[in-house]
Image 1: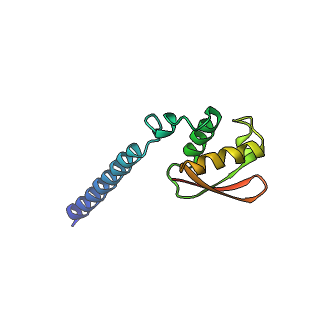
Image 2: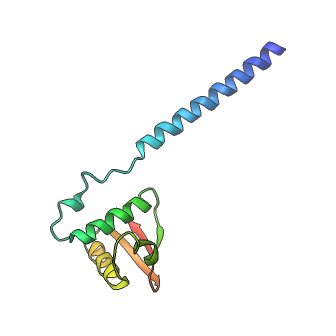
Image 3: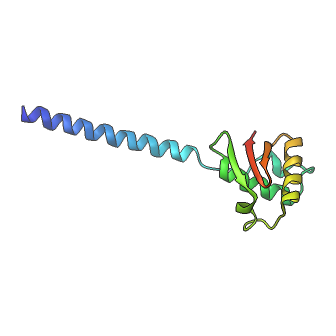
Length: 112
């Protein structure tokens, strides 16, 4: 009886270790990689717009839809709300993302 319990505990421990290894492998596969992205070769996109896209991509690369406030972006990229909106329109016109401004300076963004 004691032997069977030890076996059950051992198999449970093995299952937990196996599950952790699977999670680690999945996390390694989901790493952020923008090195070969088509935006870097696109001549229609300004360098400031590419910086904004890379920042937004790093925030929401594993999400379908995410929310951004202009106040969160301004310490990183020196930009006003109008310039940010114009860059988002440029990215939307070139099919890089879809955005919706639901309040002044607050955006709902979906990366394509």
